[in-house]
Image 1: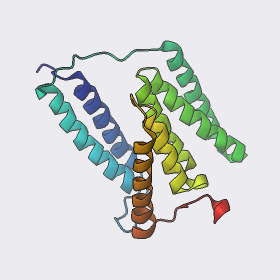
Image 2 (image 1 turned 135 degrees about the vertical axis):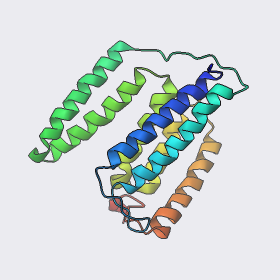
Image 3 (image 1 turned 45 degrees about the vertical axis):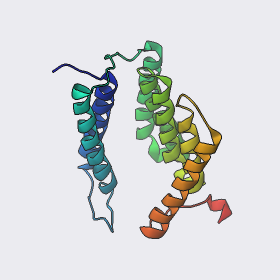
Length: 200
C-alpha cells in the first residue's frame, strides 16, 4: 500500500508505539480495579486508548484523500548524543538513589532532560515543546498541586503551536482545571494536592 498522508502515518506510528510500550511496561505491576487503581491500571488503559487511536490514524495515513508527502524528520546528531549521555547519567544516578534526596532529584532531572533531548534530536519544535510540558506536569504535580501544574502544561504546550492566543489558552486551562479537580479529586477521591502544600 502507498502512504497517502505522511503526517497521519508518522502520528499513528508514534501513538501506536507509545501505547504498546505503556501496556508492556505496565505488565510488571498490579492492575487493580477502577475504584482501587493499581500502578498498572492507568498506563494500561491509557496505552490501550493510544494504541487504538494510533492504529486508526495509521490506517488513515494509507487511505486519506488529503495528500502530505512522507518526510523524514530532521536529525540533529549533537542533541542526540547529549540525550544519550544524560540517559547514561540518569541510569547511573538511579543506582545511587539510596544516597538520599540529592541523588533522587539528580535522577529525575537527568531523566526528564534526556527524554526531551532524544525527541528534540528527531523532531520539530512542537514535538519536544509538548513533550517537555508533559514531563514538567508529571514532575510538578505533587509539589505545586493540580491547578498550577495543569496551567503550566496548557500554557507551555500551547507555545509549541503555530499561534498562541492568551484568551483561548486561558479558557482551555480554566475548563481543564475545573474538570480535573471535579473528576479526579472530588469524583474519584484521588489523594492529590489541588494547590501547593504551603497554601493548605
